[in-house]
Image 1 (cartoon, rainbow, N blue to C red):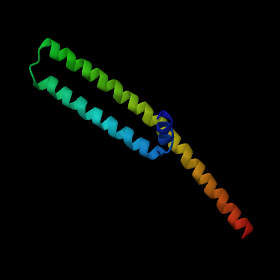
Image 2 (image 1 turned 45 degrees about the horizontal axis):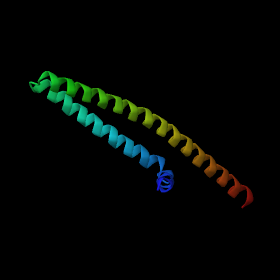
Image 3 (image 1 turned 120 degrees about the vertical axis):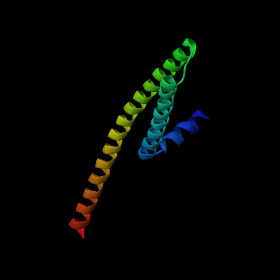
Length: 99
């Protein structure tokens, strides 16, 4: 079963992985905004306030993790783009050289 998961994950394109990660990051940012709004507007008990602050810390860590992951994915996407352009240029060179 884990073998099928790894092969399925390998088939996912970098661009779709970037989109998914951006969606997750956006979801975390929205949750963080709601938590910050709740912290400002509601009268919370000490336990609720501490729990909310812990949740906000976790959300901030997730957002930072997603930003690092996006940076890596975008670098990989750039490499793929450069490779594609190089292959296109080589193909065009061979086409014009031999035809």
